[in-house]
Image 1 (cartoon, rainbow, N blue to C red):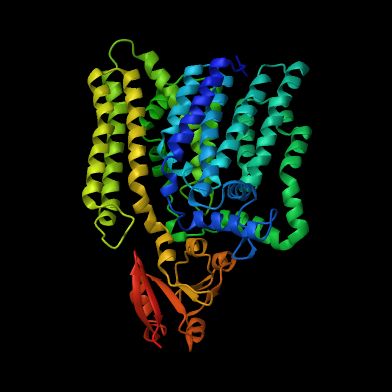
Image 2 (image 1 turned 60 degrees about the vertical axis):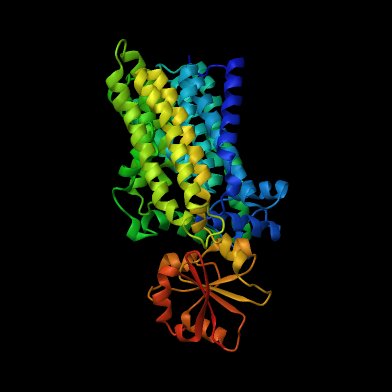
Length: 565
């Protein structure tokens, strides 16, 4: 039955899922510093906006900033206003978003399929999948876009499925109006979160689905519902119209032009624009459940719901492959349909195996999960061992402590898997894999902070001898987190080997200076600090600044120079 009403047990499951994700994703996040480059931009912007009482226009470095719409900044500002500015309160809105996403996953699958176990497994697999775990801990717009896109996907399907049978009577059309209005409302919130892509992408996917699989007038009428568009406009447009009223064409060219049209047509980082990126990322993002996804794609029952999910998954994948700029987070939305298909793969696997599921358990679940855990532990060792052995890093744990936690965590993660392996039962193996994944993620939360610290300048900000008049420069790589933690302006020394591009012109809103301008500024001024990433030390010393400064110290991978005089 479509659009099933929730019962008391469903409310209990929803509450449990939300509480589980809040605790599991919130644990130890207070130890994670704000990292560069993306997290620090959002965090500093929210702080800057509160300082200027700018609740409409995003700001950074005390000037207007048209990178993203307002929703994410509102969430951060609300958290900071309620609980103060800290690393934990910066991550709190996104931890809450992770819980809401898990609950929405259960809700959507439950009301559409009327299968409580399938809905529960969908939420569990989402909460333990690698990409969702990673992105839901980060300060990004993608978590809320994920949430609102779920709403579009579920309610649009309910509306289209209601009129799928022909002829589509007026009664069915009337019944489909309510869910399609919800879909439009969620689209409005998506546009407030990420921009035009919040409606362009789902709109293209739904149009493709209707053209390919549901060619009737009623379906097109629903997609282009005047009431739906009016509701969408009421939700999304007020902020955009107010921004245009206050900022005019600067907003249009900055937001819609540079950060949407140009980003889609001109690669922001051409050296990282690998054509195969999403082909590699797709199976990795679903770990440790990729085997079940492949099983469902091969053996799953063909029905309109499965076709709809595949249209969404492939549509998102194709859309972002056609974009000129490629980011790891762009195909995050693919998780929505493919996690549901993965949970269906588990149910399909159970139904097809009556007596001996041994070989499928090994291949589909236990072996991929085991390989996944080994790869993560190896990565932790390669990244964490140098940090743990570094005596100059006061926040890093000792090497022996690091090894102990690593080994204990590996054993605890492996035991449930081993138990499931020996028992050769699919259901038991699924539960074992979930438990192992939970242990592994807990291990990551314990060991990652000193590793992540290298991507932040929290320690550097606490080390620098700053006064009110100190001029701080950063050579080539700009670190916004240094401004956030030090509460001090920082000027970027531009790369002397790089020519200006449309991206450097549009995104360099921080204070900048050339090598020559910096040299002039330090003449006769002793209260100057120049931070140079260790990888650029030789290059920096070859500039005209090199002979006028001396090394003062080093914090992690940043070398600090001060004028000679």
